[in-house]
Every structure is written in C-alpha cells, then in structure tokens.
Image 1 (tube, rainbow, N blue to C red):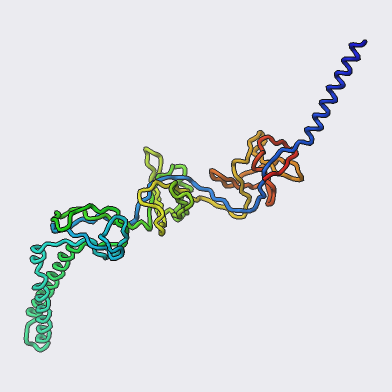
Image 2 (cartoon, rainbow, N blue to C red):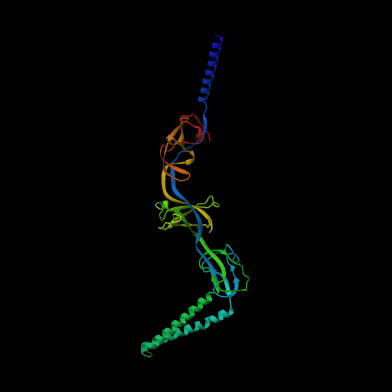
Length: 349
C-alpha cells in the first residue's frame, strides 16, 4: 500500500512539473526582426557576361619614311603621353623629310593652278567673243582641272607629315622612338580610343530568343565599380542559332560618358525582359518551402502569422508577390526559421 501511495505522489509531482513547463513555454517570445512592406518596383532580367570594347579605335601608322618628332600637348605643356585626351584634328607627331617635301613641289603646283585658272577665265571671255574655238576652251578647262588635281594631291602628300588625331579620344598606346630618328613607313605611331561609348558582344541561350528584343535596357556592372551601374541597350540580335553552342549573338551598346568603364574590362549584364511597378516585392531569402507551398511569416498583434504566397516576376534576389501579402504587412526577415503559426514573438531591431 505504501508503494502505491509513493507512486501516486511521484506521478503527481511530474505532472505538476510538466504543467509548469507548459505554462513557462507559453510566456517565451521568439526574437525576430521585421520589415514593413511598401510598394516598389521589380525587374526580371537575364544575366550575361562579356568584354566591353570601344566603338571607335584606331592604330595610327606612318604613311611615309621620315624623321620622328613627338609634339608638345598644349593641355599639359609636356610631350604627348599615354592617357592624354586629344581632340579631333590635333597634331600629335610631326614627320620630317626634306627630300620628300621637295618632291611634293607644293609651291610650283600652287602657281600652276593659279595660272591655269587665269588662262581658263581668259579663254571663257574670248569664247564669248568668238576669239577661240570650243575645243580650245575645253582644253583650258582640262588643264585647270589637272592642275587642281595635282595641287590637291600635293596637299594630301604633305599632310602625311603631320600625324593628327582622326577623332577625339584617349591615347592608349604610344611606342617610344628617339626624336629625329628615321622610322619606316607603316610603323605604329599611336593607338587612339574613344570609349565614351562601348559595345559588348554576348552569346545567349537559344531558349532566351523569345525574350530578347532590340531596345531592351541592360544594366552593366564590373567588380571594380561596385557602386556604379552603367546603362546599355540591345542594338543588334542575330536571327541565326549556332548549331554547336545552341546560342545566338547579341550586341549591347553602353553609354560610358564619365569613362568609368575601361575597354577590355569583363562586365556583367542584366538584360531587363519584364518589369512591374507599385507592387509587393520581397527577398527570396525569407521564403520557406513547405508541402502546401511557399510561405513567409508576418507579425500581427505579437503573434507570427504564416502566409502562403504566390509569385509573379522574379530575379535571382527578389520576387514579386501576387497574393498572400499586403502593403504595410510586417514581414519577418530574421528569426523566422524556427517559427510556427501563432508563435509568440518579440520584435527587435
């Protein structure tokens, strides 16, 4: 009988302890962080990578054999050097060769053009008076035209001695040559680039062909420019699919007016294929996958409320919510992993 009484007392004690634990657990609040949802925008995009190249570039070579002289950059007061910005038509290098210049005969050709022009005007006047034949007038015209051709050819040949920038840009290569030393024709003098506008050739998967259209916006980033995003757009799309790679070529043009991105950089592109404004957007990190669907937790009156959500547009980081959440809901963004529906929570920062 004593054993029975002791057993009953022991059971009663354990039951009492369990009830106390349950009551204690009721008072435990799970610490969570929340985000007050506001309407915002989302973009669905395709990610791609490629190398950016300048729209304009040239490797300027000497057209004649002559003595080399690198000139002074008026903007810096020093001889032109790598990285210098030059304007279109600016003379960077002067080539000197007295024999070459004499053979041009620019002075005599100039005089010959003037005399031919005067003779033509005189023949025109005589022709009106009947003093010369039409054949003689035409011969005077031919002489003048030939004289003008010879003069223009001389100007072109002389211009080869002044090596100018064919467009405004930055000097990216400038081989060193000792001043007043003779260089051969076809020698590289400098490389010039205008990279205020860039382009990037990419290859996209065949399955993406229906999403891609000319004019689509592309966000361009580089790991060396973490806080700067350049804006590009698709300008060309090849209709042909490469049978080996099952991809198609696309060209993106990029505005680089502040010269933030340099030619040859490896860049990441996000091609915007769809977008939505004034909608609920949340991070994918707070979504839980369960048997009944994708769920999140919101806080309402101190309790965690589990919501089943449906998706709209999405990208690698975010997703548009079509149902399950509303504007101003307090979404749990930290501490949701251990929550259950109607768990008591304590909101912390």
